Amino acid sequence: LPTVSIIKGKVADQDGNPMKDVTVYANSESFRYSYAYTDENGEYELKILDHKADEKYRVQVSLNSAAKLFPVEIQSNVEVGTENVNFTLYPGVNVYGDIRNAAGEKAANVQVWASSSSQWNSSRTNENGEFDFGDSFGIGTHTVSAWVDGQQVSQSIEVTKEDLQSDGPVSKK
Image 1 (cartoon, rainbow, N blue to C red):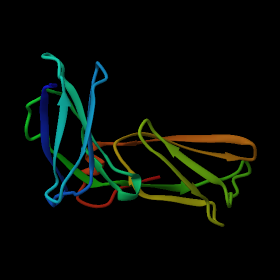
Image 2: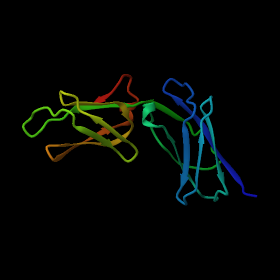
Image 3: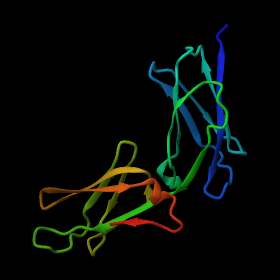
Image 4: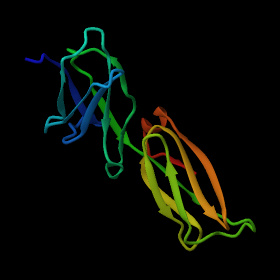
């Protein structure tokens, strides 16, 4: 019979309320993988089959961007048998701006993309050349790009742990 080892913890929002149906997953350098969903109390339990004695895991949460809540950190080097691998989720950061053509005129109806190693979002400029992704960005470097008059324009936006833990809403232009 295979041996089963456990990693468990809890996921809550910034006010301490349990988060139900959040995917929590763990992976190791030897490609062992496990995932679980949080219950109504925000608790999860990852079951690792036939774990190697010195193997450590990277544990993280995954939400779709529609949830607009993001973790502040990933738990790395977690040993099996560890309890209280907990996560707190925070509202995302709003990214907005405007797109102008080479003449400096506002560019209407332009597709705008934002991407990072873990997210992808899309928006379109309004009649004033403005776009707004809403509160849908977590920690990391996000590249905002658009094609205007046949040329790609891009800008990097950095979202930090401090941005997510801010007392009020945070916007980046």
